[in-house]
Length: 133
Ligand SMILES: Cc1cc2nc3c(=O)[nH]c(=O)nc-3n(C[C@H](O)[C@H](O)[C@H](O)COP(=O)(O)O)c2cc1C
Image (tube, rainbow, N blue to C red):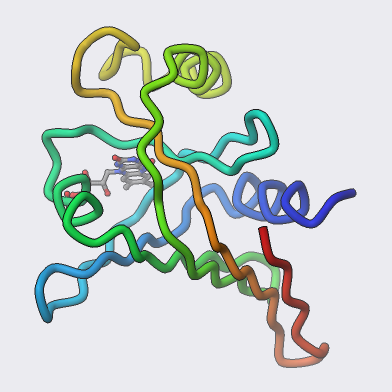
């Protein structure tokens, strides 16, 4: 399995991860659950109307943290907006429950992929493993 696939698998199995953004000098963090591998990129999904989206537009640097089964994953990187309709369709196919809230053509649904990402798996018992993508 490629490194980025391992990261996706962990996020999917953890189900919930926490996405931290920067809002001026104030960190903001909230639960997220969307994750998609498309064209070799790791995407997350949000709504353009949300504060989180506005924070990312002002400063794309983010950090993600997820925990599952004694291991945790931290991903530091930058998020890039992608308006490709196919990515939105693929996200809604993977997570059909989003269809009640989002549509590819609603002007709100936003897909963002990670770039310059450094993902580190840690635990109290094993050496950390870092993957970049
Ligand atoms: C388990 C869980 C998963 C969530 N996943 C997402 C997600 O993938 N994308 C999203 O935009 N909001 C998601 N939310 C909702 C956001 O946490 C919520 O809208 C939050 O207020 C957004 O941050 P903001 O208020 O700083 O804009 C999720 C909420 C929960 C409880």
